[in-house]
Structures are given as structure tokens and as C-alpha cells.
Length: 57
Image 1 (cartoon, rainbow, N blue to C red):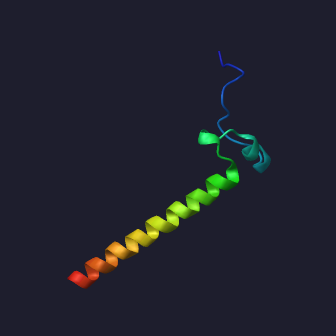
Image 2: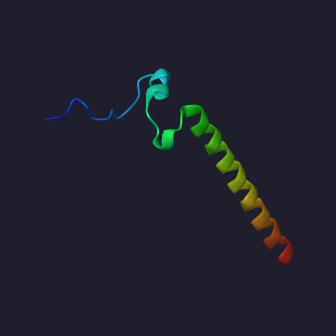
């Protein structure tokens, strides 16, 4: 038997995504912002490590 309070497997609309409770009290906008910051910093770190390796060869 499936409980009626089970989490949905998918969201039907973008509006539903705004109503979902994210961990650590984040909202959708701040989660997207921190994701982009993380991706930017990790990309920058990759380029720096690659460039230092290129210079040392």
C-alpha cells in the first residue's frame, strides 16, 4: 500500500519546484546561485591546475 504522504517522484510544473522544501532551509533561487558559484570555482580550479601542469612540463 502506498502512503498518501509519500514524496512525489517528479514535479509537474515549475511552480511546484518553488513549493518543495529543500535541505538546510534553502530556497530554489539560493540553491541555483550556490550551484553556479560552485561550478565556477571548480572550473577555475581545474584551469589553474591544468595551466600549472602545462608550465611545469
